[in-house]
Amino acid sequence: MSSFNFSRPLRRFLRCCLLALCLVAFSAHAEERLFDTSEEGASDVPTDSPEALSARDMPASAEVPMDAQTSYEILVGEMALTRQDLPLAALAYRDLARRMPKADILERAIQIARALGDFEWGLELLALWQANGDPDPVRFALAQAEIFMGAGRILEMEEPILFLLESYPSQRESNFLRLMRILDRNTDKSLFHTLISRLAARYPDLATAQFVLAAAADQAGEKAAAEEALLRAYALKPDWELPLLMRSDWLARDIANKQKVTQAEVDAHLELMEKFLKRFPDNSGIRMQLARLLILSGKETSARQHFDRLLMDHPDNPAVLYSAAMLAMQANDTESARQLLNHILSLPVSGDMAHFLLAQIEETTGNKELARQHYEKVSYGFSSYFAARIRLARMLMQDDLASARRVVLESEARTEEEQIGLKQLEAQLLCESGRHVECHAALIAALKEFPDHPGFLYDAALAAEKLKLWDESEKHLRRLISLQPENAEAYNALGYAFADRNVRLSEARTLIEKALKLSPGSPHILDSLGWVLYRQGKLPEALTALEEAYARMKDPEIAAHLGEVLWRLGRRDEAEEIWQKESEKSPEHAVLKETQQRLKP
Image (cartoon, rainbow, N blue to C red):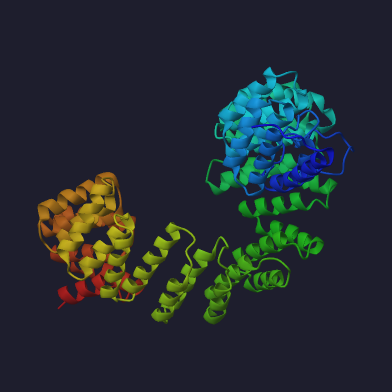
């Protein structure tokens, strides 16, 4: 391309255009820097803002000669960024970096490589930058750390990070905390733990270094090392709440996951938090975590005292109000929960969770109309929208199947999983209402849309069986077994279907025994085994299997089968006692009623 002679005003105009484009382009694409390299008090503009990025990264600087081709390619690259066309921007900057490997061009190209996730190109750019003169050490170290992070070369980050930590001592504490972002993005938690261990070893008296080391050790599964590092962080900075909050999160997580946590561990941490609050009674974060941990420890009365203080200090804080409301719900104090949740609805915040919780309160207390109103106010896009629609449909089904179906059909599914869930719910509503023909039709339609979906195959098989479409039911279950050869429920359903119809009993037993191998001790499968043994005339063996099934789960259908075997063995009083007990709990159970009507004179 031939070179044009730009007049000075035209050059200034072009630079202004490029600067404006950079402001727009990087408002969308510039990620926050891994490190803060601003001098303390040097600027009021955050270093990761579009303005700062533009000023720092503008390619059209004095070091980049502005010939026609260069100006054109910068213009193309920056315009592409404004349109969020990263591949086109990369195309322009690839050529620029090759022809003119200056620091400003290379740094901008590295930012584009990061945004694209093209870290191989990023590594090439780093090599180009290093080979073409002495790069600015801070800018180069930042680029190295960011590209090494994206490329998964975690341990190679040590040298540039150490350089940056040493270069900016006033930001050292905050920059260590920024390393937490690597932990969130990085999948190799063990490597990250190794990196942080090396860095923290250089700063043994820095509380934030020990804090980040604790987080890294926890993510790597090194529980003892995590505990040690967190204790060191707290000892170095006893007025700092973050170590206490992190320890609270760990304990809450372990309790929720039913991992081994001793009461002594919990009590020791609760005592630490109580002592902290005596020194800093206005620290809401610690008080909130303390109250939550007290709830998990079963100490609701103590927790309530802290929530009362939080509500007094922060009467309009949604987090405090929600936590207090849920504590009230747990204590069955529905009136207090209602007041707190209705107060949230009066605040200028999203009320979706408040409506969802109020709906559950009203449903539980029998106020179905009010519950319906609250469920319907849970908006699409809220995380519990789908759960709200399911609960609403199930509540309405008790009185009005048409309304329940309408809720399902009018619900919006955000994902394929939710779409499938709605179709399954519609079929369940129909089946549970005894409308087996419509249920079967809904499931066949679902299978046309989602062929080979395991849930639809299984439900369609059971629906076909209800309509005595034996061949179709078997076809669905055989298909499910071919797709999931370890699916115990599929083997059990097919075996039980044969046994219940008193056909192909040898094959039925083989299928059920296979199911029992896959799911040992399952009460439903033991019931099926007992039933097929009964059909084969093996009454003592049938009794053993059914007694074990009933001991594991008091279910009306198992009771019906067990009672029938006892009846055939002449132990009629025992049979009637079991039937009577289960009839009191499930008076309308079809199998239990049919068995008694058939056998009793």
